[in-house]
Length: 471
Ligand code: HEM
Image: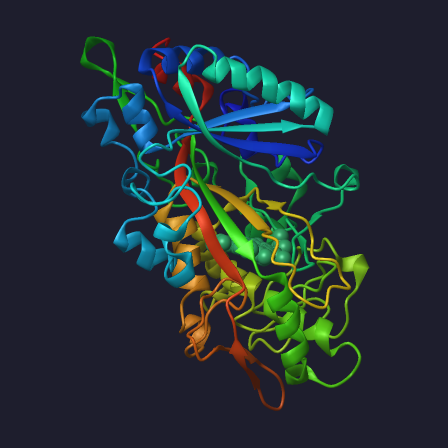
């Protein structure tokens, strides 16, 4: 049994802070390294951890590789971090891996873009990410005032930009889930980290489906291979090493702009792919995602939405839907987590799939497009996608490249994730498997554009103190 040191792990690993309806993500540049280390050391005492509960508000902090260098870390320890984190998100190689091309290319990003681009927080100056969460607007204003003056008051940090997600609706803390801008309930399917106690609630196939080794998400513990994920370190006393990674993880942030009007138009235009009845539009939209608007999974309820199954996550594909006749093989959730369909034997398939899980903590930004809107209001809206994984390449990047963006995923041909993909100018393809034959929707357009992004390291509290030079 893994004993997870919850008191040393930042709380975002355990919770999306659903009771905290307001969130702000602040980007800073280190202006004075000694002052910034002092600030970090003091902040460590205020950071929300997995043992503290959520209290009146929540605070977490993460750093980029350039941020660690700006704090004064030497090249040797800096080289012990995971390569994608060291290199950053915008190298030509990573642009290809992530599919960040055309309108999603980093030199067009609002933040995190390459040095010299128009980004308000270009990657060479993007050092620190402070994540603040509060239950309401008043509490957020006080928290912001206090944290902003601590960070910048004595010139330790320079504020670059703040991302502001929309407040969560009041119903969220009552156990409901968020709704993303295309209109789908989101956040129901998450891996369950071994050692959190949540795994005790699952047994049998449900446990095999969702329980994932601690080291897949927290450094310092055995991962899905039974090994310790390489951890960064600092030189310690007596020529020893201080494990800087223990209880930390890597954090991926991507600002994904959504073309909601374009999505709705496409659904109207192509709904005929799945029939001409009154429910065809909702059914076609559900086929693209793999869940109905309510959240109910197609694998469980293929013909109609069923709110009683809105939070259902007790399903696989191999037994009930091996050929994608319920949930298309290329649907977003089937690509992002193919569950038991990655190998002939189901238990083995789940083991393999669970080497590529991510912990999602996204929140929407920008106002919703009213249901009655007949044209695009040109207001920017989307998802501030945040996910965590101990191994960026094997988890986040693999999901994005080898599953979502792979044109040959699951025996398909020339298709991409219908939600995330960047189809060619002549339009993308999406196959809806069915019996006796499949139909193919043509002319898919691009609905999601990357507006910014970066890789961060979310240290444990002891890691923060080591970085501050206080351990
Ligand atoms: C604006 C962009 C996106 C939208 C609108 C979107 C929407 C959704 C929705 C509606 C669900 C179903 C709810 C749930 O299962 O929790 C979902 C699930 C999921 N998404 Fe996305 N998503 C987006 C971006 C991404 C990205 C960038 C990734 C990773 C590369 C991703 C990975 C996943 C995963 C892993 C699941 C859970 C699948 C499962 O376990 O069954 N999503 N997404």
